[in-house]
Length: 357
Ligand SMILES: Cc1ncc(COP(=O)(O)O)c(C=O)c1O
Image 1 (cartoon, rainbow, N blue to C red):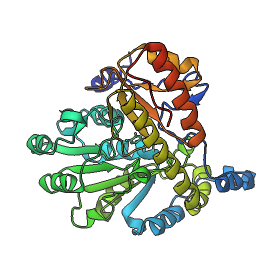
Image 2 (image 1 turned 120 degrees about the vertical axis):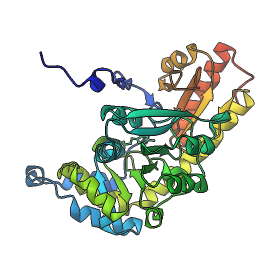
Image 3 (image 1 turned 30 degrees about the horizontal axis):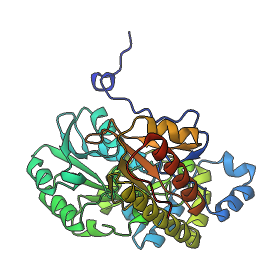
């Protein structure tokens, strides 16, 4: 009988609760309104023959390189950051190797690394999810071939300093260091370009979050040109579809749209953090488009759903028992969120009164 490889049989499966997501979706860290109108206009202009041809990635790699101020040889467009992680694992990990991750973090690092047969070593974050740089440095071994860090991190919204990340990259020149900047636009700090002094360093970015293109699946992996050349070898030449490629220049050109969205999210983030503080709900200050809080009531998620708002239970993540992650969007979504939050807190008699300010 056909049987999957042992590591695949024992792989934890990632089951995002995607079914029946009716309502205001504040559970997936997506853009809660959509993409730039310029992208929609481009979609309307696409012709039948545009769909009949295999997609050409290279011209758009030059466009993205121009936008990011790098050379096209230093990047690879990918089917979201998900694929960038997958490709790095395929490029660098052998079955006896080790991959280091700091938990809690984005689930796909573990899944793709474990699927290669490599051993995944989880380093727990420090108090208040602080980045445990000393512990990571202490776990680097000869067999460490991948270290993946989301910065800002999901689901905590916390960050690692540039110095800590560079120190790790310098201490493990035999390992690929992935700094996953999926939430860069909400944070503003980057390690872009540092692969020129540390050629084992990679940076990943996505168009799924601030740009509102999660459904089109497009991201970018950046790094030293020799390393990127190696990663390119394991990638399908058609990994990014032609609709995503056609829309990319318009998405990049409409920076006013992205800036406004980021401003709205950051204002909403402040309001939500204030509401938690005034209700004495513990939360972790976030540098991303979501906030993690210790609500502690299993009923809270149902109460929010009754009010048409989806939020995400993160209880099963390391150190996140009783925690809920809520994504921010524009002002009208934050208004709805805070009104529902207030009612849910009152019904559950949680904390003090949540502020609507
Ligand atoms: C840290 C992190 N990296 C990557 C992703 C996935 O990004 P993409 O949609 O580009 O695959 C997510 C999505 O939630 C994320 O939180």
